[in-house]
Image (cartoon, one colour):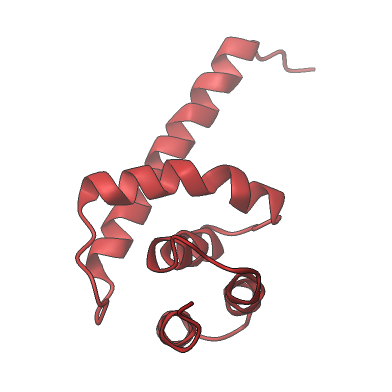
Length: 112
């Protein structure tokens, strides 16, 4: 049986999380057609703030996580209807560009 120290396992997890966060920051900077400019500081803050919510929503892939965080950036005061619609988009089989377009449409159609 392989014994891995708790500290080593935590270090691997933290390294993986830093890489995922950096990948999100690169991804969101390259998303075409956003109605706002998202600075790297804003992207990092949104990532950190949205991660616990995403875990509770059982978001299971990096791309779904990235889409979810983008939804939270686009809709900082998300209401219940927007939340349900956004999760439906996040978990859909649509392409990345289709999901982004749907999130932008939800943002516009349900301003409240």
